[in-house]
Length: 415
Image (cartoon, rainbow, N blue to C red; front, side):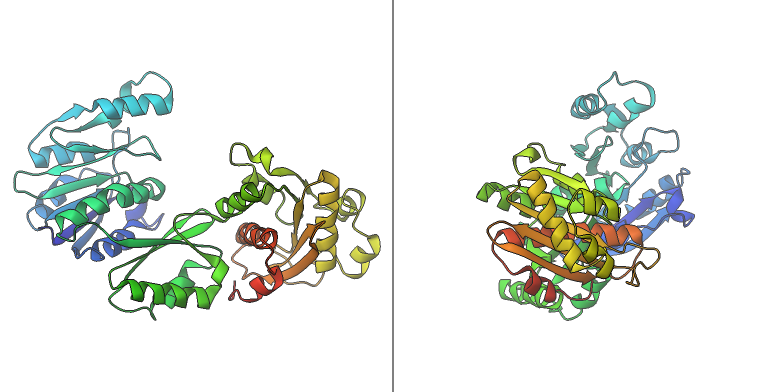
């Protein structure tokens, strides 16, 4: 039975304060959800001190989790230390070798070969997001050692897909029953504040990813989980929390494909960021016909046909301009639907409008046009642009489904 855990976070950048540790809270929350208590978290540099620390922790813990130190360089010493503590030796793992060869597309030699070595008797955990696989196994004293890559984008998916189900079984909790949701636009700190109103018997966790936050609920009853997610949706907006592991782009593309309709975009402050997202997926030409990045008023007038008087009296950042931008790009590309984004991303105000003011336009020959304005908290220019893109994708889906985008956006909490 696994009840006590320890975590070793390896990285000189962390111990020097250059970057912030993102693993401690993530791992301890997840372990708590399956009844495993974390007794100790230790951050150490890439300097060989892992031997003495690991030797001590394996005698005080049922499981020791280690993140980092699995790279190809000489200061990546994790796998060697684990082999010594486990009383075994390193050997090449054929599956790791084959996977690394497929990823780098060239002969494996020198430093790269190190990443295919794991302690004898340990089990490989395939890393789909990087070149260094994880692994786990037991010491002679019976302590389980779990070793994971350091980068969060590699460590967290591997932990969730492989380590957490394994530990759930070993801790006596059986199959892990956990719900996953995807939260858009809302800040992680806002979700954290809202979590305080959730039933205490529910375990709660979040993981920040590009353009979304993955949200997890476990423990408690199904009714309590239903109440918790209903509370969150009421607080931030129904459309900003989706069931499962999804994205605003996936949700929109699903609707476009199901309805066999096409989309185009006119972008100003986002500078093509939305169009870039819409063309990420193979086959995107089936539903996305094109876009115009109308950063200047001249392009808005001459390419999209925005009325000069509208620009002069209402300004580039206005719902009137947003509608004409969307209408213009739809006519230009002959798409079924179109959206536009025009706003003030910062750092300075524009047209006497505050940073974070963003107008959205939506156009369809069947439905006519619609527009609305959102006011984003200014966490920097890039943040305003990224949140504007996600808002445009969510609102476009609502618009194509026949919903009221103005009413939907009005229900969203402070952004």
